[in-house]
Image (tube, rainbow, N blue to C red; front, side):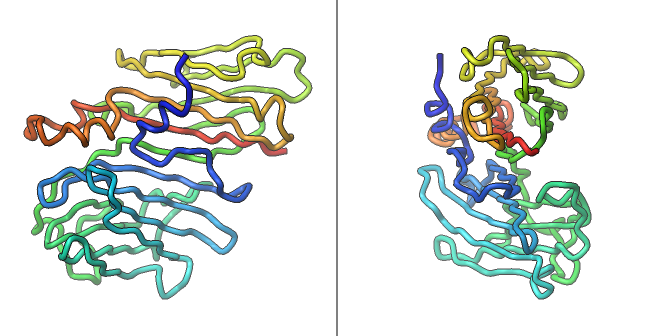
Length: 285
């Protein structure tokens, strides 16, 4: 049976057990992108704290070397819209954002009416949001070279009593899937675990007290997806313990970045690696 350590070390996003304060809501996404024609990873972290949202941006090259890292606190009125200039390998990297009209659901990640863009040496590296013209910054991305990045990993904190939900796209050319994890451990003598993709049950674990850690391969749209779970803290920890679920398809980003120099760069990256989703599922009373 594969363990979490071996899977997490291959993921394109930092997915070690979170050290964030209890109850802190967080979504972290890793993207495969191009920087001066070379592979790189851009990690975007959305965090919800007591005072509001925090946006973190980090960029690493193919060897894992950190090229830049910064944090923006758009709950401050002066920072709901703005830009930040940084130097990366001797050239200018501009982070441009507008969160002034952003709309959120329960989580920390904005859903619409926002944008975040990374512009490096007059080239668009990453653009998130629902506009390609950056308003008051007078920057039109249509006039800039832009190679669309691919989300390759996502880590998310979800909360519930017995049902936990998330969405994922296991291949960039595929469709979004609704993932539901259901497990009732409150006062149940023999709890079981059930995972559904859409309305279809793809995994069921009975006698969970004996199988609180494990892995199994499921198939989504014909694509093999390895599922790992660790629900130890749900069963044997505190009443508000967290479980961890990992869904992994295709080749890991780390392996791809190391091999990208010898691969055919005309092939779309989504055809060469898959996607990793990690859920920290925390119980609430």
